[in-house]
Image (cartoon, rainbow, N blue to C red):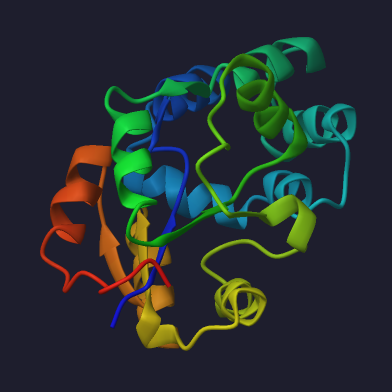
Length: 203
């Protein structure tokens, strides 16, 4: 039985201007599927979201990696704007879910985006545990990050349901044995959870 809901952040619960901003920085249109692939393979972003470099070094490395003729300050400004506000209905759906399930967050992210949400919104409050790639040192879709989460939660994979907007991340979670679903809004997440057998008690 599913007792733990684990959700991604950006693109599921928090609105992103990811494709638009990256396309602007790179000077070309980047479709969302290509963007997911680029993000987990670009050395600058992997190092930043795995906690190996700081924001200033990331901006410099990003410019070098993609041979851009822009300033580090411009990269940082656009990068911060990737993350917008929690999506409409997010707070209500999370509050409802936590009445029946253990609720955790698992996000590929970095200190800049984490602090932006923390300082502007009470977004993280509903979650019992928050798992962030830059703190763990591993990014989705590496199976190691899912094994880490399961170990910390002390649960079997079949007791967890994971929600992400990235198809590769969903597939990676499924290979570990987690029930995983691709969604793009809190409403889509909530609708899938409604099909689960509800735990008799909040475990």
